[in-house]
Length: 113
Image (cartoon, rainbow, N blue to C red; front, side, top):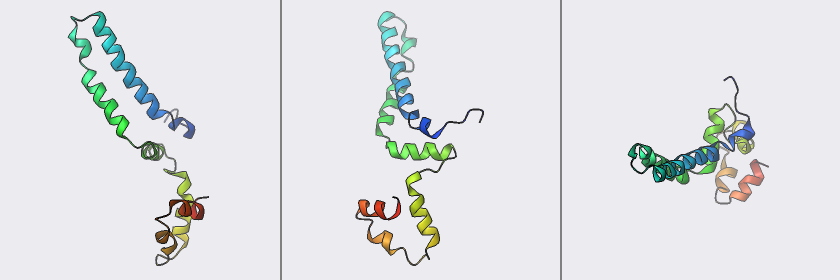
């Protein structure tokens, strides 16, 4: 890439996409108000509103992980402690992770902090 995104920039990608979609549909509605005879202005309205609806259904944490991985970063930086543990532990000794899956705070304290 000529100008790759930095990690901090990834956090604003989805809000910027949503803002662009919103701007597009609002400007389309406004333009149609000014020129009601021009139905071509409304050509992308349904797609735009559908996209906005889909964007609101996305899990921001999941989107962040996908974008980070797509840009060559670790998808979830806080998971490196878990991965280190898993790589250094025999496959039969994962019980500390399995035992505390019901307590996310305990898992976070043990392997991420």
